[in-house]
Length: 429
Ligand code: IMP
Image (cartoon, rainbow, N blue to C red; front, side, top):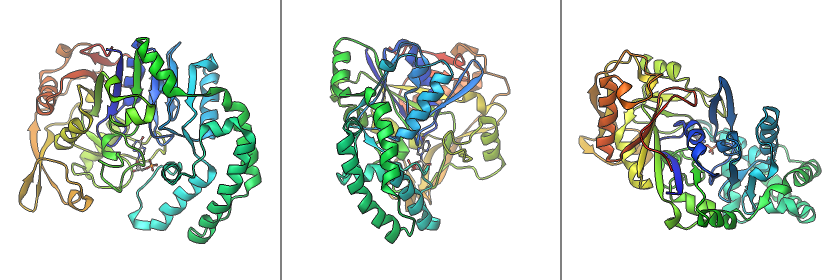
């Protein structure tokens, strides 16, 4: 096994950052392949919290090559800030350890303005985006008017493209969204600065990755967001603007499907969602508040409180199918301590009918009534558990039931925030 994709199976925030950090110890290369700085991967290293939005979390491990591949959208301002942050904390000693695809698209100030402006215009029906310009940037990519990372390496072309695109964007900003126009010259100035700073990282990362895989290097593909936020398969339109499922690894990194050996899905032991959109097992009561408090459920990117609810096995089974999972990681099991009984959704009732699959239309998803199975909880502190057998029998039963229902073997269980708080049942590579 030399390649592994780690994919979020819920609405994002499954704890991917911590697991990537752990798996990266055994990897040579860590790759981001979709999304942008809408993601926020929180890591706790020796008691210190580090949140990364763009650079793969593998950067915290010495000597790992980190790749931001073509499917990612990059805000160069955020990238520079992240590089500075890492350097100030003594990480990322060598510029060659970060490679960025020449084909990745850039987020520009007008993308952020359009994201915020169109959300405001939507009013009640807003998606609740992170406001980082992700959607408008992917829209421009599809409309073939985007600016790519390799454009940073050609300052004259960059200037020309920026001037032209700003003319059009300013019409949209002022006439449709009724916002102020963006002055071209300061933007051009700013981006010429990025050109100087960031051109050194630009590379054909598809070519590089294929070579590395051929040499037998261990490659970890780090998913962002989660399956239910996938543009095609999620709760559309309350989704992000990229494909988040395992298939996106190939397109987003420029490798063929046969090169992915293992597809590991990651899920919390319960469910959370941030932003708008339907969430069948949401708890809008004290129990939901308790989960939020015990789990520290506040967005890593925007700080928004996350909506919390029971584990939804129908939704997870859907994720198993969409991603073709070979293994499963369950995180934040420790958060369920003291909650008794525990409930798990095993079906949805809709207009008297029992549904066993996730419906396409959000109007239906909004009306689903979850069918729950109950489990006995546990009172013990499990945060120091190192082996499966260290867990109380009720926690073991809870995990076995998830594994049996989903028909995917467990690979790891996370029982706390710290790097070491993980029960590894199988080596990732
Ligand atoms: P966008 O990706 O900023 O366009 O936001 C679209 C939706 O995806 C919103 O509901 C966001 O809250 C959600 N979202 C985007 N990125 C993440 C993430 O990393 N974790 C959880 N939710 C996210």
